[in-house]
Amino acid sequence: MKGDQESIVYGCIKDVNSLAGGADRRRANRNAILELPSADEWPFLCRDMFSIPTVKVKQSQYHTDVIHFGASYRAVEYEWDQWMKKFEELLARMYWVSATVHLETELSGTHSFSWESDGLCHEPGSGNMQVRCEWTHEGRVSRNL
Image 1 (cartoon, rainbow, N blue to C red):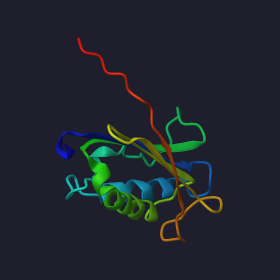
Image 2: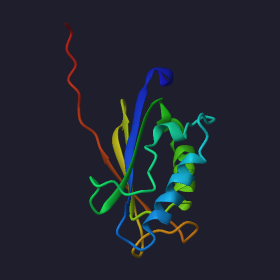
Image 3: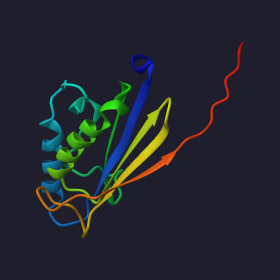
Image 4: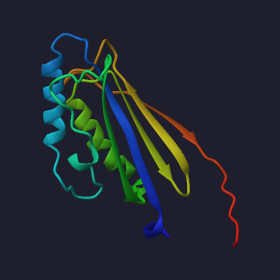
C-alpha cells in the first residue's frame, strides 16, 4: 500500500572552494538554501533537510565545499518528478560542480541521480542541466521469527 512505503532521499551538492570568489559563492549557496521554506507543500523540499553552508572556510575543509541533505518520506517516488523539479530549481540558483541524489525505495530499489557542470562549475541562472540516473535493486530476504 502506497501510504506504508518509506522512501529515503539523501545526497550532496559539491562546489570547489578554491575558485575565485569563494566567500561570495558560499554566500549565494547559503542564501539559496535559506530561501527554501521551513515546511513545504508535498513533496517536501525544505531548508531543514540541508546542511547550511558557512561563509567562512573552516580549517578542517579541504578543496571541496560539500552541502549534504537528507529526509525520510512516505512513498515520495510517486511524486518524484515534482521533487526533482524543485531540486533542479534550487540547483539553478546555486554554484556547484556536481550534485548527487539517492532515492531508496522499499519496492523499486535505489536510484542515484547525478548532475555535473558543463564547464568549471554551474553558476546561478546559467544553462540547462543534464541529469543521469542509475538504478540498483537488491533482493531482500525475509525471515519469520
